[in-house]
Amino acid sequence: MARQLHLLAATTRPRSAVAGMDPLGVSITRMRVRPSDLDLYLHVNNGVYLQMMDVARSNYIADLGGFSLLAERKWYPVVAASTMRYRRSLTLGQRFEIRTRMVGWDERMAYLDQEFVRDGELCARGIVAGRFLTRGTGAKVAAPDVVELLSPGLAQPVLPEDVAEWAHAVGVAYRGD
Image (cartoon, rainbow, N blue to C red; front, side, top):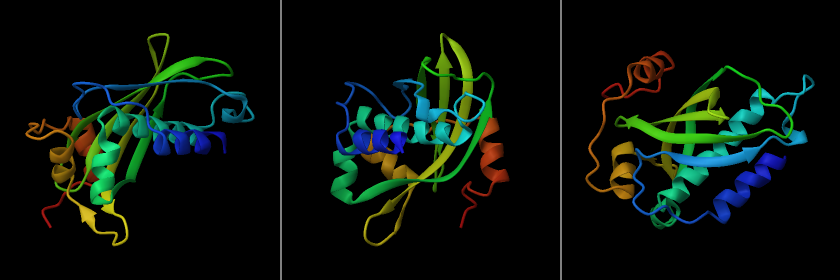
């Protein structure tokens, strides 16, 4: 519940935009492991990582100055798929940061890489396929339209091979339909 409140705050009272930030830049969210983040083995519960990633993605949108732009169009983000890889445990009181960046997009999805880093060491990595919908109608918004709104004229990078393979494997990649 505590991370849901953290997400509520990050979304309803977003931090200030970062001057010059574009969607391919890195957004950093700093956190500390709280008692409510832990499981019975006294490390961060796997489900809590996903909640922390939600907070970091809200901060990413805020860093881009995107909340007001998206609200004008009634567009909002949803997660279509995600995957995690855990390397090192995070335990009570440890400080860490989540580094969020978009690694590319196709006609349907924007793909984000989110790394949990403590003292320079990678602890976990999540890949997220996200899309945008229109509030009230549920109409799907093409990912290039969202990128154009957030950063007009931004060139589309080549999607990293591991992300492209994952997107196809889980069925979220654009199929030309």
